Length: 389
Image (tube, rainbow, N blue to C red; front, side):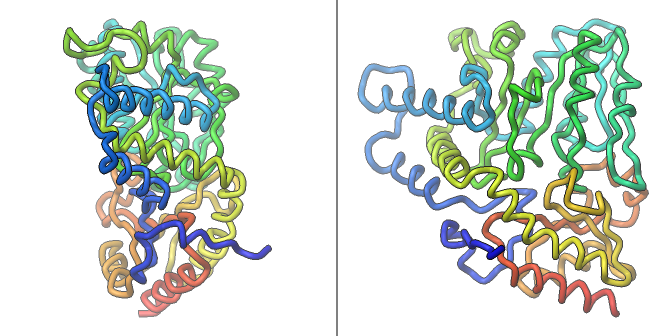
């Protein structure tokens, strides 16, 4: 198969850097940049809710983009809420859920999650006098066996919170049996899909979750967050908001004025993703990730944490190099214009269970659609050189 480059669609990667930092935030696709600058410069920019042209355009933009996100994830558009980022949306959502909890209720989470899907629910449980428990993952295979979560679900469980994929390890757990078990016990399910949505097609209708959150700025859109929630549940939750604001529909969770230019960028990015096709994007990413993963695994002194092959994971590699701290490795790569992240990457439960919390965590390198085969080889050459010293 001949690799098809999309680098020309991303103006931000024209400076010679190999950007493996995508798991924290990707570069923005050209159509989104155009949509944002057009919105800000053609007279459309304004606030929604009025009768004049710019206000009407703002309302129309929001509704169009809700519909676009709904199509992307095969979910009702009236469950789509926009916010500044996943963490802020999850704190708002978990706070609303917390107001419905009683002492003795239980929230079940996992140790595979980004802390934005842990601390948020921990705080909600503490405030309500409820219990918050975390299911461990398998530290050898770096997988999350469904039974580890299901065994913690009981008649007291009100919510189960899951990672669509690990932001650190790349592991994409089998969610369906956990979701089914939670629903059978009368619990609802919240999914942090931030690390999954950039890489794999998500079908909420098939998955059956009650709520899901994602970060468009990790799938080639501007900095922003998107929450989807079952519309009936979204309407029923006691949202924290000002009294004059809307109390019906997804906007009840959108405190303050939305970022319309970001929403314009999201709409354009959804168009890009659907035009390219998520399955085709995933296949192209794996063309790059396969040699990255096997290359790292073959270097003496390099330890790769995560699923050994391409199945059941996203194209994110977490690794360490013997004799060098993750920070040192990241600094050496940066000197060669190769961008990676190091540390815990907010997955403190993951590095804690792996015993890496006192040694600097890991180096994290992720594949995004603007990378090319030569970028992978550049990274491997530097890591191989470091491992030999």
